[in-house]
Amino acid sequence: MTNFDKTVNRRNTDSLKWNVDEGELPMWVADMDFPTAPCVTEAVVAKAKRGVFGYEEVPARWFDAYVNWWKTRHGWEMNKNWLCFVTGVVPAITSCVKSLSKEGDGVCVMTPVYDIFFHSIENTGRKVVESLLEYDGRTYRIDFDNLERLLALPNVSLLILCNPHNPVGRVWSKEELARVGELCARHGVTVISDEIHCDLTEPDADYVPFASASPVCAEISVTAISASKAFNLAGMQSAAVAVPDEKLREKVVRHLNYDEVAEPNSFACVATVAAFTEGEQWLEELRAYLSENRKTVLRFLSEQLPQLKAVEQQATYLLWVDCSAITDDSQSLCNHIRHQTGLYLNCGAKYRGNGNSFVRINVACPRATLNDGLQRLRKGILSFVPTKREAVGWT
Image (tube, rainbow, N blue to C red):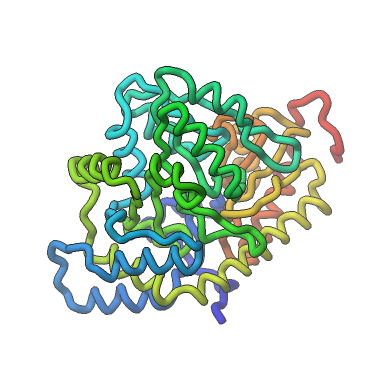
């Protein structure tokens, strides 16, 4: 059994997450505070010991690892010819935005959503078209009428889908995904599906790959996948795109190579292969630990901070917490919490949609770290002056 309670000191290690002042506690960027699976470390160390770090090819076992993992865990039978190596999901998305749309086109996203999508769209001269998810105070749903109206706009050529959805934690059902595919096909819109969080679901939540939801979904989509979130390998710069349709695949792969993001470094493939061929038991232990961390936060909020509500979470280790009872300015709230307690959270406003009233909390850390963060959160919330006149439950 893996000891996920063990604390690893990541300060002064060039960690983006932990590049904070002494005494501060970062619970923001999607980066876990757990060492990766031992099999991955062993494979990387063995590779390093060879001492030669020349140009690398993508080996056949890398393709096999992806195909077998998605077939056995997720019921999607990919053809290895659909796959192309890429240095990360974000580079893949940005490259696909450039190759599958024109400057000035609209790219639809369902907000609140991962903020880097906006960068991939706006930094390439495209326009963000927001379809707001419906929020009922507990969970989010797709507003299909609104989505179709936006997909029908003459300048909208792409939809970037987040499946499972970051930050709201929804695992979209097969029926929901098939309906999204049907609407996109009807209006000539291609789908880029970011599925990087797919292996971090709750035990009772079944992730469905978008391209497996229907033949139409497969025909119109590019799926970005990786071991990086589930196995904490973001620094390895290793991911894949899967594109079932041959013509679409040719266009995507050509541009990935044009952008020079389709070649691996010395450790990218070996780490991924180890994770997908030997890391399943470790992942199951991790998922159980993360599930308990989510429950710990829910209990704490219910007992100590009833002013806040965590959205029902089916996936990811990023809790989306509703602060609307006390503020609709989450940036001010996050600034206050960090100044008062050192706790560094993500402000929900950056995810657009109704994010102004939310904060995002990364709970992928040892239980002691989580409890420290929750105590800091309580201190920060209780010292915050509500900015909504109708604030309730205040003590």
